[in-house]
Length: 163
Image 1 (cartoon, helix red, strand yellow):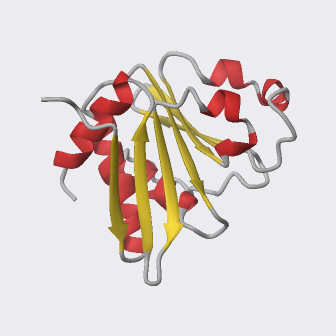
Image 2: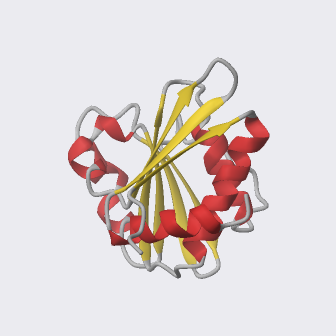
């Protein structure tokens, strides 16, 4: 059976968005990936940080989970790895990633959650999984698209993970 490349679902509210983030975390943990990059796209207020919070909480982060809007990066140690939550909205170009130490963040044992990936499309194109949140009349639509073998495996596990 071929693993899916894309998946879409509706999220009724903030709780459903957090639950989708948690489900995504469970899918990724099950793969024991050495490194992973997930991008989060959507308009302001669409739920990118909310989804990231659900993801991080499911991994056991109990400290405050802040939006990286002003700091550009928030890092969380989790079970022998580090999850970096990045916001690229204020980046002018890919060269700004060097100032963030991006190369060091993308190594083994590092997972990246990147908001506003469209600001550096040449790097975002390498994402294992691209998530997009869109407004609906009521709630949000979440689209997931794989960009790698790991991304396809995440999608396959996400489909069967507890909702």
